[in-house]
Length: 179
Image (cartoon, rainbow, N blue to C red; front, side, top):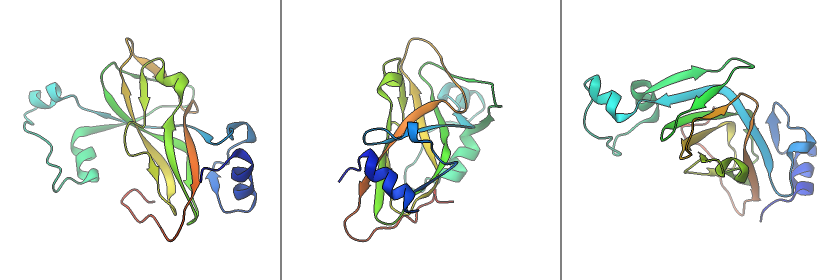
């Protein structure tokens, strides 16, 4: 069952659900919580650049491990407060929510983009929207710009929404993206 704003506030007030830094009440919408961008991003090298430096072939999903992949093919970008990052047209980039989300065992969620951002061509969190019960970390987002121009983002920009749901039965996240 999807949580409405009053249930989200109740979970926060009871200490079951938390955000670090805390979200203000304006970010709690009818049935979601708006989240913002952190200063940390990753740019993934386009295939044409990888060929230039002598990396060829394909990514093999069997044996693929995120830490080694991002170390080999990604470049971390830290955007200073007040500065910006342009997401180029037809490029995949990764970023994080500013908020560290701490979900209890009885709540899970889905991360979705904002329709106003999608309308200018920025896909936010294009795959794997599930946030499992027990998750406690910043949420990694996948950006892809399908618009006609680069899209400028800044740390603190509202970028996505977290939709919260009650979980039936036992479930607890223990994946590789837990802090």
